[in-house]
Amino acid sequence: MNPLTADERAAALAALPGWTLRDDGKAISRSFAFADFRAAFGFMAQVALLAEKQDHHPEWANVYNRVDITLTTHDANGLTQRDIRLATAIDRLA
Amino acid sequence: MNPLTADERAAALAALPGWTLRDDGKAISRSFAFADFRAAFGFMAQVALLAEKQDHHPEWANVYNRVDITLTTHDANGLTQRDIRLATAIDRLA
Image (cartoon, rainbow over all chains, first blue to last red; front, top):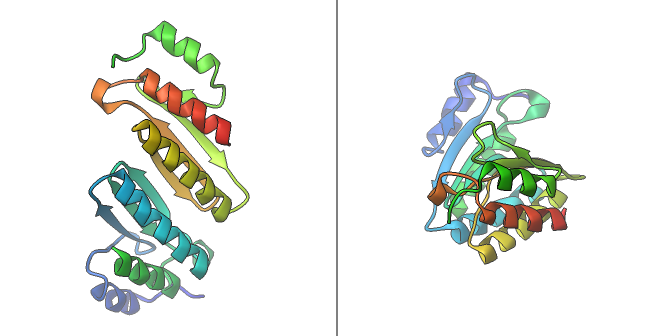
């Protein structure tokens, strides 16, 4: 799978308004805030199931009610359609 | 709850050989590696249940098969017995 071109990235991000492109263009990130840890981890469990189903996994961190997610495709050394697909599915959950 | 003294910290860490004290003495960290994401997230789910039961939550990050955990007690601005208790319970899982 090839990295998205700059035009493809721009088009994909237009449909993912909560996500920010990293300066190097190789990853996208979004932070989510929930009522408490229980809600945050419930969300993480849902994301984990999506990730496993898509065989594409986030880089993510959690502190109490907050979940920070970064998506990139290591095999392609950049942002690919797999990241966009997972981000879109995550947004549907949140 | 008060932060542990330097002596108390040293005694506690002697029983937690996998954990490293942060330079400022206010937190401990440990990295865990698993076979794959499924195993890593399974571990995280168990830690989440422990954390919720102890009402004390980790700062943590996951990338594929790796889980990095930091424990500190924000209310005490330092390391307390609550961190030691959670670290001990986590070690029993891993």
